[in-house]
Length: 45
Image 1 (cartoon, rainbow, N blue to C red):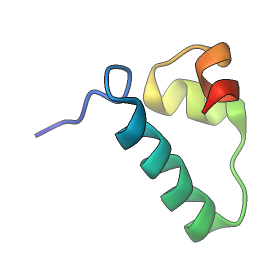
Image 2: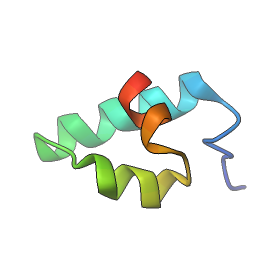
Image 3: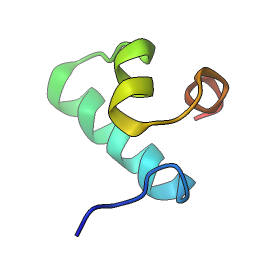
């Protein structure tokens, strides 16, 4: 089952936290592509 991160902000934010914990940092441009959301959404999250 694929999660629609665009439609579920809490799950998207949780995934971003997971990536931060695993990698120490994330790049917003990568998150935009990975999650299929806008730059505004990434900044808000």
